[in-house]
Image (cartoon, rainbow, N blue to C red; front, side, top):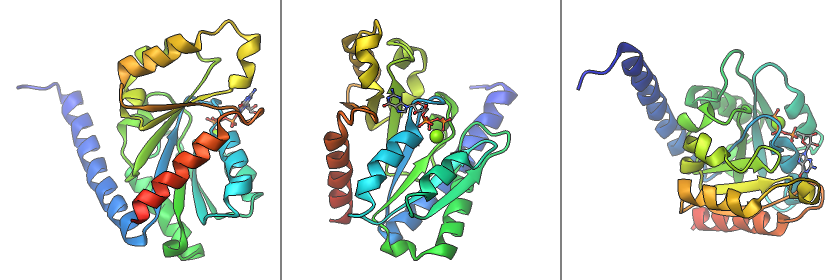
Length: 226
Ligand SMILES: Nc1nc2c(ncn2[C@@H]2O[C@H](COP(=O)(O)OP(=O)(O)OP(=O)(O)O)[C@@H](O)[C@H]2O)c(=O)[nH]1
Ligand SMILES: [Mg+2]
């Protein structure tokens, strides 16, 4: 089959990225650290979720964060307040993290702490509903957030992220009483796109769903350490 040059270039880039992602994953496995790739559109609530999750979880498990952002270190500064190791990865023009950037971020992390002491590495990807899902970073699981202000149709319109996700967090459910939003329709669209994805409704304001989310994390760490 003859592919257009642009498709060949894209396949080559993705192939090289997958190779580095495998190397990253091997490294995470050697260090026995579980890696989650946290992805969503800008503003769906990734950083807020991490802030609220780690307030309490970082006292029970050893966690570090790689914080992807295009131009600022604002999110990294928010998480540093929790006194956990945070490495900002500023991508410049790139609208996603790639495996090479994560390799670099992990190297900086290794210069600050012993990574074999970690239980989990949380990677907040750049806010974008399309590109981050195309680039493996060596993660064990992909977590996609979708806030209810974004619309019920998004899993159908932007299927790649939802097809790839192990867990979908429907965020900002505290806003449900104020919106004309059909959460069952959204769940059905997630299921049409990816019948295997687990789904949790969550709010970083009312704390709805946090027990389920934290249990999901604990279970994945336990299974990984076996
Ligand atoms: N009502 C409500 N607002 C939320 C919730 N979670 C986050 N927000 C608000 O949504 C806005 C964006 O939250 P962030 O956590 O910065 O979103 P983000 O996904 O990290 O954004 P980027 O890093 O720019 O992609 C902020 O004003 C948050 O306070 C929630 O559960 N409910
Ligand atoms: Mg953020």
